[in-house]
Length: 345
Ligand code: TTP
Ligand code: MG
Image (cartoon, rainbow, N blue to C red; front, top):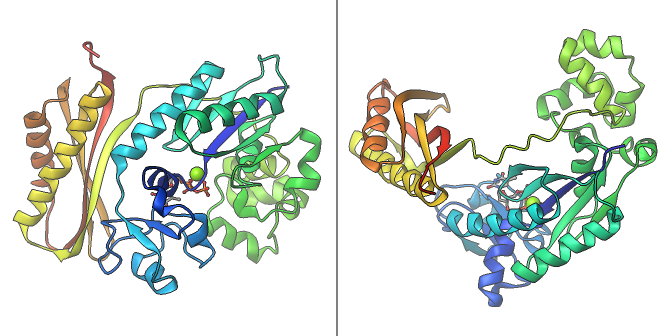
């Protein structure tokens, strides 16, 4: 039986901000965009105090402001969060070499081979993270990734939830279907039409019915997931797959200079990111979202991997010139893909 641990930091961006500004502790904090709630942008994260006002991730800042005008609004400082994130991932790597880095504030760890009890390991991880960063996290431990991720979310913040295979019926089946990885609002809607709202109802549906409704692979996935079955291995790649930045304009624009200047700034940030992390890229992709939310990308693959700012900028501009800018632009982004470690790092 495998033992998989999932760690997820609590209100991560907000917690990092409160850490370096103790006067903010205990206050409703909203991190997002430029930090000015009268300007366009969405909430990246809200502190637990702010969440009691109904504020949540992806909500427009202006709406968050209306819900709680006295909240403290702060801009996203990605560099600082990624610095803290690295410290946390390094701590996790001290426990087990089998790590899957999922996002800035979460990771899976395979602890099957460790002799200590699950409780013991979880408490040690929490203590070490708290000691070195001052932050709290929530941990879930289960026989697979699917259940471990659900478990880490069950008792936030500073939670610890350990699930065994036999707990699926009592602990997982009462949860809404949305808690299953890979079930978004669209599938949730379809399932609702079939009178399936909780995972237990999904588990009661015959496998063949689900396959008929959702196709062979997704139908089969839904059937297995609802029974807590997941054999997927940890993807233990340490190399980041990409470095990217994007920005949403204050108001939609068709001014090429404005778009180009923003793109140049974003390329500089991506190049700095690559250099800091010791990576070079062989593919530059530019993304444009138009005012009607239509989103397009254009990419260029380079003959050799690079972290050279001039080269990256030239390629990004070559991508930009491939767009037909007939509509106003809402967002521009750039991503450096196909990363390799630079020898000097
Ligand atoms: P989450 O782990 O989803 O959220 P959280 O850590 O803020 O809160 P929780 O205690 O519920 O885990 O995401 C981690 C970070 O990723 C979050 O601090 C900010 C960022 N983020 C966004 O920028 N936009 C989003 O829509 C979400 C969900 C997260
Ligand atoms: Mg989190």
